[in-house]
Image 1 (cartoon, rainbow, N blue to C red):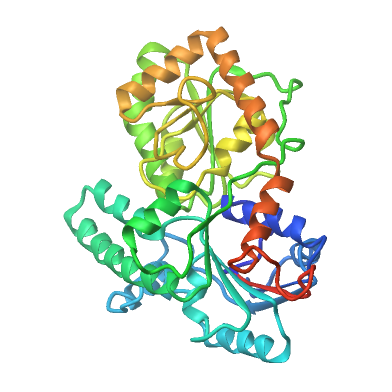
Image 2: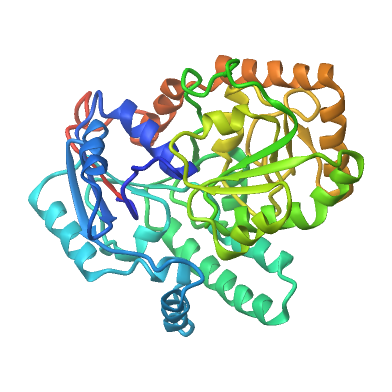
Length: 413
């Protein structure tokens, strides 16, 4: 079960699920239930056949952020006890279709991909139930509260944070197994929700396609060019890049006046689009292939102040042998080493200083690039990661269900 089709592969969570399902589909029959746009591109629907035996969809569309419809929809949920980020996915049609699937077939496992689809699940799930969490959602809302400058915004965000805490706690209690994408997230679940888990959290590490995300020597890097990639309608990305352009980039330009920045990613919000008004700042929106954009940068930055889960974007940049400067939160949950394969800096002067140093020190930059590429190639190929996930589809004693190959797995997303 999922909240939408995985294609196009324009978000980190979609990429993670796609690669895991592609590996699992070679051995298991997967039924995939998700929302989809009322008019979905046929190539996206056809492409999903690579990762599932059967595709089931329920029509749904989101209002674009910043529009009147977006704010009207959000206002409807002010008094809803369920957090807005979850409540907006509530759907009788989705629940009805899921019940029909579960009544018609016997599934060995039911996997809920991300937290929002939980709002549509029946009280009891047949077979084995797994919640695949890509973040600790309540932690993301807490960090929104911490960074909110406007008192009214802080009050609304606090309300959503508390609602998410209650919803996430109740959701974890419903599943046989909870899968997290990092040991840090697993620790946070245990800290926030003691006694709410039926079994220990199963950690599935992040992976990367190191053949696809590989160095591109035919695209030379521009010395003072910085790149960021990500879904630009995700609030942590929006906050991070507004913070970078407002507070960090001016410090970099004091030392390196010719510095330019490209913000690459789908659906930039109005706040992100306004960043392009700054000279030397490019906001592209969706691109067919992020790799040439990443290759053109001498440095890759992840200045996130809010977040959870793990950032696939960092592993993708590592695969392309890019030197990376990130906040600690930006690299949270990843097995990286500060100063060896990445540089971590948390306040604006330190972050700017790290960027300037790497721009000027080609040898240091090259050492980071080589170490980053070596790390992901040797340890984080998707085939090994998928085996970790498959282990979560087992009973507590480590034995697979009634047969060596799962006949049916439904993934409600």
